[in-house]
Image (cartoon, rainbow, N blue to C red; front, side, top):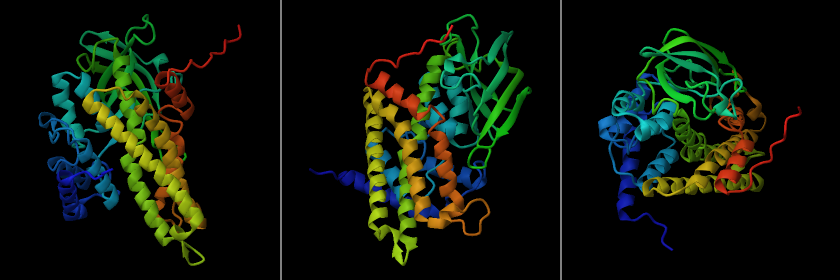
Length: 396
C-alpha cells in the first residue's frame, strides 16, 4: 500500500516549508489579536494561500480550489515548525462559513473580508442563564419598531465580548411561535448604546467569558441573517462549525509537537522523559488519538468537497478533541514534575504557564459548547439512530 501523497503534493510540501523558513521571523508570538504583528502576518498568510485558502477572492480570501491533501500539508508543516498558522476565532471559524452558506451578497461583501484580515473581531450571543443546553429556550427579545430591532435581554459565557467589534446574536422575534421557530439571527456592533459587558473570571484566572446585557439596543432592520423567525436554521449551521473549531486537530498536533520537545528536555534522575517507558507509553497513546482525530478531519473535509453525509464524523470532533487536549496538557504538567505546579508569576514557570492554563481551559471546554454528556447523547441519537434518552416526568 502506497500512502505517499505523490510528486505534486511533495512539491507543494517543499514550497510550504520554504515559505515558513523564509518568513518565520515575522510570525507573531503572544501579541494581541489586533496588534500590527498579528494583522500583518494574517495578511501575508492570505496572500500566499496559507490562510482563508478556499474563500473566494471576491470576499477577501485566496481563492484556491478545495484540496484535502494541500490543506493537510499546510496544517502539518505549520504544526511541525510550531509557527503561528493565522487567526481563528468565532468570526473566521464560525460566522464566515455560515455567511457563505446563507448570507446575502451585501453581508458577504461587508463582513467576510474584514473578518478574515482580523480587522473585525466577533463574539457569539447564544447562551443565556436559563438557556444553555436547551438553547431554543432563549428569552432575549427583539421587537421591530420601524426600521430598527429593539433588543432587550441577557447573554452569558460570551467569549471575547470585551474585545469584539461585532456580535452575532440569537434573539426571539416571534414570542407566540413554537420555541424553535420564533428565533432570528442578528448582527450588530458592540459599541451600540445599551450594551453592558461584565467579565467572568474562569479557572485559568483570566476573564475569558463575560455576561452581556442588552437594554433597548437598536439594530438596523437589514442586519438579520436569513429570514425573520428562521434563526434556528442559521444557529445550527454555526453550531456545527463551532464544534469543529473546539476540537481543532491542527492546533492539537502543534501542541503534541511541543509536548514531545518538552519531554526531550525534562529529566528524572538524569534520564530524559522521552526515554522513560512509562511516560513514552502515555505519549504514544496521546499521539495515536491525535492521528485518529486528524484522519477524522480528512473524512469531514472530504464530505464537504463531495457533498456527502459526515454528520457522525463531525459530531465526535468536539467530544474527542476537547478531552484529548485536556489529557495532552495534563501529561505535560506531569512531565514537568514539581515545576508543573508552578503558576502565575512563579519564577520557575515553564513556557509562560501555557500548559497549566490550557489544562484548566480545556477542562472548561469539556463543559462549554455542549457538555461531553450532551455530545454523547447527540452522537447516539442523531448519529447512530439509537432511542432517545428517557425523559423523567416532573412531579406535579
